[in-house]
Structures are given as structure tokens and as C-alpha cells.
Length: 249
Ligand SMILES: [Zn+2]
Image 1 (cartoon, rainbow, N blue to C red):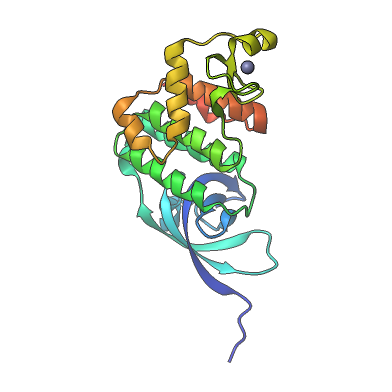
Image 2 (cartoon, protein in one colour; image 1 turned 180 degrees about the horizontal axis):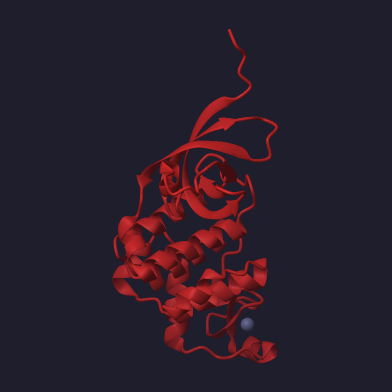
């Protein structure tokens, strides 16, 4: 009997992005439920005739079969089959870019191999809502707030981030939370409209778990998404390039 050094393994994943590699190949960045963020080499997937190529577009929920080899820095993908294509999301320009934005956030904020099943579940929830045609600004802002929470950067929105005074007038990007009048003056922060503070608090409290309640009661604005993107950029250095495109649509 032949001894196989490779073992077939199948994982459930969301494709985060693709990057060109050699002539017809691509590196496929995915988030899997079991193994966190991983990268695969997809041989020949950039050929127009490749069946796998169609199944590994970003923002696709799929099953990936690969040969697991212990000492390889990057595993080779064998086949990819679709679980959810999120077709409606991809056919809508704003929703499609929203999907790419949250995938980029996950790709930039998670470490390779970092296991985080919460992030995986929340990503699928957000893509499903976008596919159902739910309001992109609300879904994206709830997802980003949840992602910060999942990674231990949750924003402080129950009072002033410095003194906990519940009368708040502003937000500190540096400290990641609301500010009272006194600390707003000390930090020379701009004051926020009370309605904006209230809505931003609801978004952060709801996260993905109560996103449906949020969708039924509140409409987040693009400004809310922008504030969260600014927090992410400031604290992680992730560029979130997709947001620039998102703003233009
Ligand atoms: Zn204060």
C-alpha cells in the first residue's frame, strides 16, 4: 500500500479576496470556520475555462477541498464548491461593494491562522443580510462595530470613555469612546449632534446579534460607517481601500 504524505481535507469558508499569482494561478484568501484565516494557491483558476475560478470569487461561501501538507506555507486548493453565491448582493453595486468592504476588514484585521468562529459567523450573517437587500450602511456599520468588539477593541458608548459621565457630547477616535463636555474640551474634539450620538450608540450596542432590530428601528448613515472605518484605520493601520469606492457609489 502506498503511503500518502498528503491528506484530503475539506473546509467551509468565505472567500475574502483573490490576488494574481504566476500566469494562470491565484492566491485565494479565505476565512474558514475551523482554521481561521488561510491562503491557498489555486492552480489554473484564472483561466476562463476554470470551473473553480467561478466558485472562488470574493464574498462567496464555499467548501474548499485541498491536500493538506504539514510543511507547506501555503496549501494547494483542489476544488471549490459553492454553498451560497450571494448572487443578489453581487448584482447590486452598493451591496456588492459593502460585501467587499467587510471582507477587506476581516482580511486586514485577522492574523493568519487566528481562530475566531465568532467573526466567521458574523461575516456570514452580514453577507446574508446584504444579499437579502437590507440597508448597506446599517449592515456594514453593525458589522464593523461587532468586528471591533470580537477582536477586543469594542467602543465605549455607555458614557464618557475617560470619566464615565453619562452626559456625552462627542466621540474620541483615539480613545475609542464617547466624551463628556469636559473631556471633549480637553481633547479639542468636535461636538456631535445628540441624534448622531444616540444612533451611533445603538449601532455599537446592537452589533450583528441585534442587527435585525437595528434594521427595523434605525437607519445608519454613511457617516456612521465612516466613523467606524476611521477607528479601524487609526487603531490597526488597515487601509480599507474599499471604503473609498463605497463612498463614491
Ligand atoms: Zn469625561
